[in-house]
Length: 116
Ligand SMILES: [Zn+2]
Image (cartoon, rainbow, N blue to C red):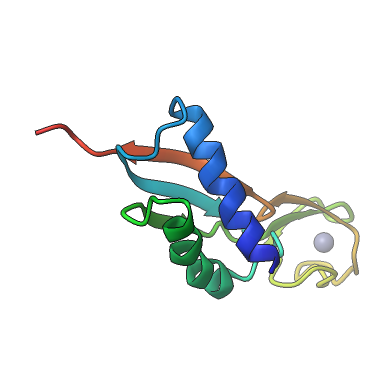
C-alpha cells in the first residue's frame, strides 16, 4: 500500500501547487529513479484508483525513470548501478561509491489543460 499513499501525496502536492485546483490539470510528470525503491507497476495501478477517489481521474501520469548512476570512490569513475551494493565494473571494489542519480522521487512538473 506504500504506492497508494504515494499517489495521494503526489496528487495533493500538485493540488497545493495549483491553488487547490485539479480540474485544469491535464498531466503530472514524475521522475522516479531506478533506485528510488518504488514499484512502478504498483504506482501505475493505484494512480487511477486514487485519482478517481480524489475526483480527478482525467489526470494522466507521465513517468521518467533516471538510471542509477554511482561514482566510485576508489577509482573515481562513474558507473551504472543496477542494484544497491553492486561492485564497480572498473576496479571491482564493493560498495565504495556515492550515488549521483537514481534516487529521485519527485513531481517534476504538471501540465494544464489549454483553454479553448
Ligand atoms: Zn571503481
